[in-house]
Length: 201
View: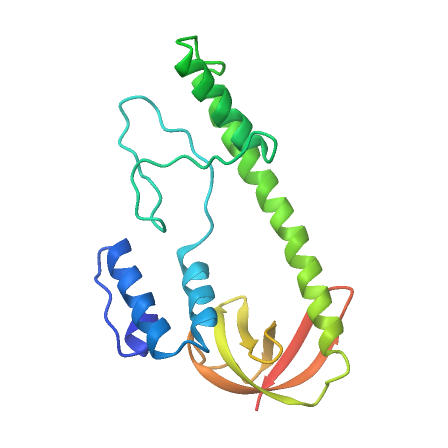
């Protein structure tokens, strides 16, 4: 809501996927160049997803981002373990056989799949961060236009536009909030750790 208000838009106090979709569509039309950064900021504010088991008779939470209540994350059984589990459940149901997993077992598998996906995401993120740090390592002291993509007690992060990479504001972050546009100066990089440090210019 605060992010939308800062851009002259309004979102309702009660989460609404349709209102969020309308807000994003309006912002995409109004500012297509900076829309990817806004979209990333919204995704970060929504938080990460997780695998959960929906029990018989339980109301389905669905998928907020896709605005659907009946949802199962499943693509191809050779792609990911969660897909294999879903396919096994569907095949048992279609053949009128017993479910191949107990509910407690499914809960454990859901937690395991969430943990493993988070681990894979961390590795992928680290590779991208190190590549970005290497890309910028020869540009220390240059200034860039940026947008704030994260602001919390842990720190403030910005995404510069050219090249489109993210780094931490280590000096001058006071008062910055998600969605703010700012000019930053590149102070340093650490390729091994994937660090890109900026100062507010």
